[in-house]
Amino acid sequence: MIKKVLEGLIDVVFPPSCIGCGAFMHESGFGFCPRCVAQIACISSPVCSCCGLPVAGNSGGDHLCGECLREPPSFGKARSLGRYEKALLEAIHRFKYGGDIAIGEILGNWMAAYPYPDFEPKGHSLIIPVPLHLRRLREREFNQSAILAKALSRRFSIPLDAMALKRRVHTEPQVALGKGDREANVRGAFELAAPERVKGERIILVDDVYTTGSTVKECARILMGGKAAAVSVLTLARAV
Ligand SMILES: [Zn+2]
Ligand SMILES: [Zn+2]
Image (cartoon, rainbow, N blue to C red; front, side, top):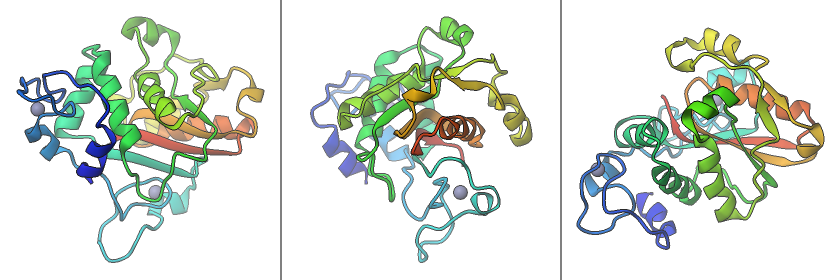
């Protein structure tokens, strides 16, 4: 799995320090030092065929998880590269909170090279990052999801529209909230700049982390409300 990703990254230039632990690397690797690479828990089958949650067992293939059976989300499929822990979590924090955009570009390239289970980015017509509210954008000075989305857009030659979806409400950070509160927190938080920008499009919605899925579910609901043909979700990491 890792080997496949690395092959896809062969043409990208990497800095000499590890984006996970910061250690100096004698040989320019693929962003992560070998120790950190070994820590990344990539997500592969069996997963929930809808939300991509890793499911137990290795005999039966992909199947729907209980939550997707009970409440089918507005997106068709969600997939993530790896578990939100250890080196991948460290790298995301260095990128997002440390403001190191170069790390985001490397992580975006990993995302673009990853062979997701039963998911093909080709065939989509538009890439949309989960937007930040203007206030958060001013604080952070960049939208981490847009930087990841840019790498995907480049790799697959799919147009990127970072303005089609807008966050109209400044919501509390989701980090401290439980699942029910997260859903309430994001309900009504997003709107379309103009429905014709998404109408008929097969969209990949991009975010950095899938936690309970409440943010991407709400975004997908709004995009489908604007008559998008389909919405898939890609995130770098998944909390499981
Ligand atoms: Zn490292
Ligand atoms: Zn599921």
